[in-house]
Length: 228
Length: 228
Image (cartoon, rainbow over all chains, first blue to last red; front, side, top):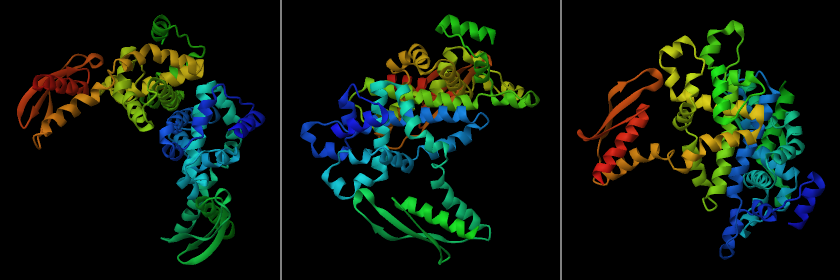
């Protein structure tokens, strides 16, 4: 926790009044379950709160940035921005993955690099920050960590490439597009996946990334680059 | 709008800096569509924002009020509290239904008393308040209008009575429970419905309310009182 506290202060000027909130945010249920007798709090309740403050701040950001977008379009954009893989990426960017407390089984099976766990962790941290410092502090933090990436549209890519490839190929009728993991290497916290994409059995391209999904997107992106 | 502004100031001490936000919050799409050439803004975008701020504030309220409730339970409670019929009721409590601008067709077909329209209106108002005065002001408003009712559990009743009655009757096997509107009176903005509930054709009780749903709940409540 000391190292995390130091990082938060150095990188974002954040010092928690109530350190137990931070502690709870970084405690996964699997760790709390393993130490049941100690009655440790885990981060699910904070995640509930963090999810809500994130939804609000992204909604407000979209409302102000796109004065002409309809409700439905803002809603779609928002769900792309706050989706699990994107939040997990922000957790990794902040180095949060190094500090979460996991149960032994979860640690062994690679939980430290799992998108669901890291996405929830990011939300739980926002929930803790909200309780400790209020909505303005959460907004400031997101403006440093998340909004710059949102502005460059990098959150959009994950959805786009696979959809774009599918749309491009299906203009000529039904095509079966298959993504296959052809290689997987590195330790749990720094895995690299290699994925190959085929259309009706014909290899189009390959791609890589920290998760299967990211590698698939990279493969689709490369395929698009070759085809168009 | 003048009358609405007066009510807001007198009842809640709210004076909008930017009156156009209030105007937009009280403009239904049907009105904007009818005056397309005037390019009037309607309330759907504000509703998007208001929904998000409402979710956050209710989440925070539940988090602090129930330190031992799990995420899933808070989530269920929240969805009961912010459901459409409940928000429509708060719109009516504030007299908002008197001030919404509707298209002629919508007005004719009773839109002024429709839960979807009034629920969305309540959210749109919260969105306008958020933009004009910030999250604290929305929180203060909800503390006056909504939280007292939530505290008394009155938001819970709508779900409970019908479910309770069904559960009670089905302990003895399958039973067909039917709710029928037997009377409907009053002007559009102050309708009263009378509903009768039967089990396998046998009349159990009657109930009344400002909407069919509320009258059904009232009938179920009365039936429960007689049966238990």
